[in-house]
Image (tube, rainbow, N blue to C red):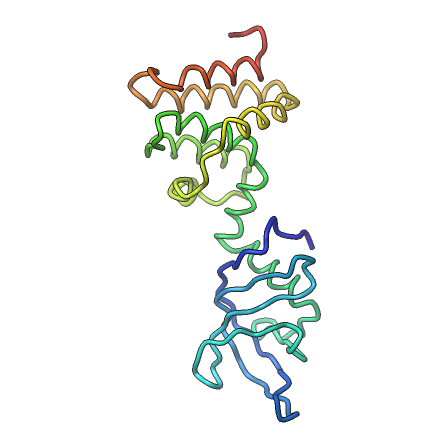
Length: 214
């Protein structure tokens, strides 16, 4: 299982049947609907936030206290709960989006830095960036209409992150470098002028990816 980049809580909507050890020594079997989960740093344990259908309330469950877990949809026993949850999340809309952002982190950092040159990421800029990500990811990508609104919530890359990304992207195939420069120009051209940081940042992109073509 590939570990996530951090141990943040992640949303999920998944029914499970679990058996847990109770304080009186008995075993309780119940159905729960997982709404969020958080993996441990090593990925071998997980904490579930779930609605318990037996008690009718929301509870946190530590995987160490779960004696057995069953996937009702397949009727299969879940032997590795952290890996199973991560697989389910990775296939969800939110998980696919997170994976896409991680896969193309450097390209996204560059395009966001260009788009936010004036401090605001406009709708057309988000649409162009989202379309580029779909183009790069192909059939595995979520639709551009789902990606674009999420871009507003991403942290603005620093100048250092921008230049570090350019350094990494300089090793891309020449055709991909040319395409990224084209998209960078489209993002910048959404604005009515290049009076601020747009032109210097675009110049840095061209210089790094297409040296001698400025």
